[in-house]
Length: 88
Length: 268
Figure 1 (tube, rainbow over the protein chains, first blue to last red):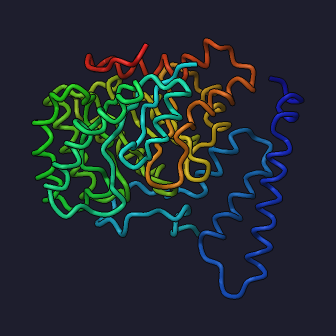
Figure 2: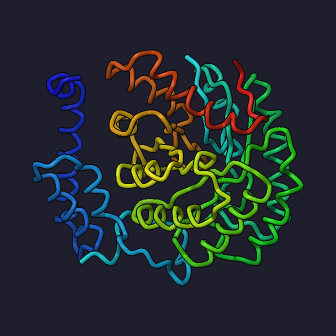
């Protein structure tokens, strides 16, 4: 498919998702309390979308990922939250 | 349309899901051993689960003319307890000759801990000693990138392991090349929020080729879609992929990998 055809197929869906993201950020900003590393990771991930280089999905996923390689001493719980708590 | 569901936890699904999958053209369902949503209290709980996977669930599927296959292991979410894991792994060999067992899986890592790694190595050793195929679970979300690299190290460090007989599941855009570049097969799981959407899975097929990739629903007791594979086929058709390419992605590829186990026979 060419770019125009892809836009025909996916533009409205992508637009809706960006608006959902914006509304989520408004929702968080309206609420009381502090944001944590997850919100920070989200904002860092968004900056990747400004790049002119392809590979957006990979770079966004890496922004949320634990980049270390040493195994942890013990599994702390079973679930994942979607962002690496060590993000700076 | 025909398709193979290479990863579905049917013990957690209702019978209507079998009806829907059979109606959509499902020619075989493969069920890796999984976490029940709570920790089992003893190896006996796993013994009963392995009987469910090898005796009861194939009968349930057969009522809808769908062949049912399974993979056995103690899943990574219960692998922190090495003593329990050792006792469960000791139970597995007596089930390996069951007619629907395809291999060892879904083994792997969950939180990338040292104990999980020990248990992964024990499973890999069992698979190597008994000549079984391997299905690997990669961790969720922020743990996936690190876990995939650790898993690949374990598999590559065991010289008995043939990459073409291992599928590493739940890949996404940041891990798919790590897996394929080492000669392993890769699975994409179609979860709308926590793994791949159908659109992203088709992107990956387009970018990395369809040679050693498959798609699965991994439907279980959580939010998941048993018909995710046929929906992904629809996504491929919306993009103009030929019927043959769709068939290769959802039937031919899983058939090629799974047929390395002579017991695997889909409904044709």
